[in-house]
Image (tube, rainbow, N blue to C red; front, side, top):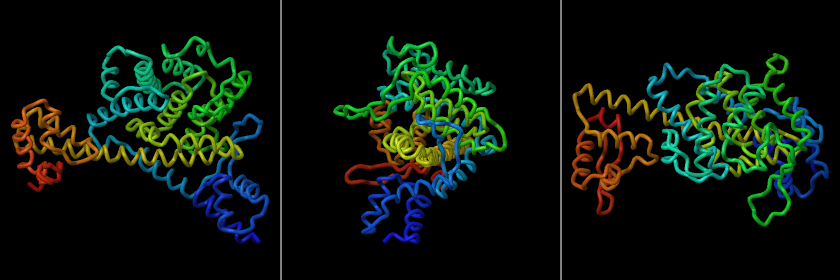
Length: 418
């Protein structure tokens, strides 16, 4: 017999601690208890709605979307607020800020295209933004994304309205659409989102009817522009809701995901979350695509509950923040190292400086003479001499692995102890 006490235990485990969907909960409950109440999911859903908050945006059935704030979500929001609203002017130099902003824009342009099926490389992306002509559709997508991000940074004083949105979509999709995908404004036909599984016949999502798109978009813009105290929603949560609802409406034939990420990015920057300029959330999203699409599908399938998407995006954002903080730390350490070397009148050659810049970004802090030789296109003897000089300064630590020597990058810490 499933008592109220046991029900409370289930609710606490699978809503408060972890926010699971219907089949995930029923699977666990059926394995833990021999008998369950026939309507246990309906009871859980109703209790969630009672604890949740309605959003003034409707699904295709005319019901309002809603979400609830769980302790894990609150913790993620607290961390995002603590980091993303900090003033970097007091933490890192203007040069570091400018360099990382440019790198993050390049990352976002690249990964936001890759997640939509583009094929290219980070190296080629850097060439494209340096005014190289795109050779194919994938490269054009990447360059378009870069131009859209630059457009956002140049127009943060503008209201996020329909005009800005249409401009963004045109920038993002120029010269990448087929003839039947081009429309003056919003799509004028049905859109079906198919599974990546080639054998699947049924669509995994049917977007709203074209005649409903304008009204739903009007609701979205009203939601974006509502700054009243009584309807206040945490800006980060609101940005994620904007992202979700835009994808839900699917107002264009193509480019919806890229535009959704662009407008949520613009909204956060306009709300004072300047730290979002310094990292590419899509670089993490690209590694978590299954989690991302599952969160969207869960929100669509289980009671128009946005908590799945909001919670998932909060975790992805925090992972992005962790990466950029480590990146900033490495940049600061690198800058201090170069300043100390200059102060001590130690002159490195350009190859050595270039390699130190490479090592500060490398995931592994281990390298070899062969790696140095390959990156700098020099002889083995020149590479060995350069690396030994860096090792003598304490910047690298030399060790033997098998029959070969490896070098562990210590950076500022090693030099300071030298």
